[in-house]
Image (cartoon, rainbow, N blue to C red; front, side):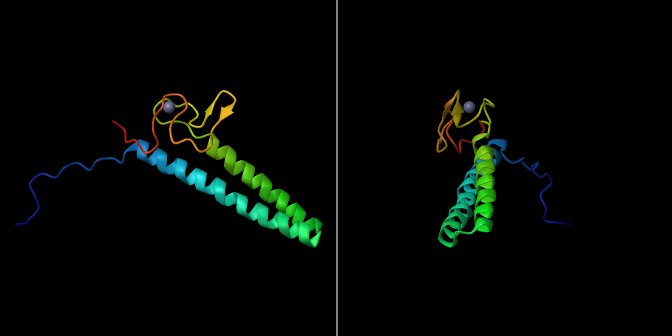
Length: 109
Ligand SMILES: [Zn+2]
């Protein structure tokens, strides 16, 4: 005879909104971190007056722009609109949806 209960509760699936908030957080962190190599390579290129470092800085700039585009393209888990953009207005550091007002880290009701 085992000590296991007769019935076990079905495992609850993870909250999809919390997974979306973690995704937004990772996108924002990557956007912040992607800017550091660009600045470093830009300074090195300016100090050394080297074309190769300038080329690497340009590539790092493109990577930074791609990371930022990915961060601002995040869609709100409730209304599916862009979380930080409304029309041409962009607020990259928003902690709430510009369309429905959903606060970041709100669990799914
Ligand atoms: Zn929304």
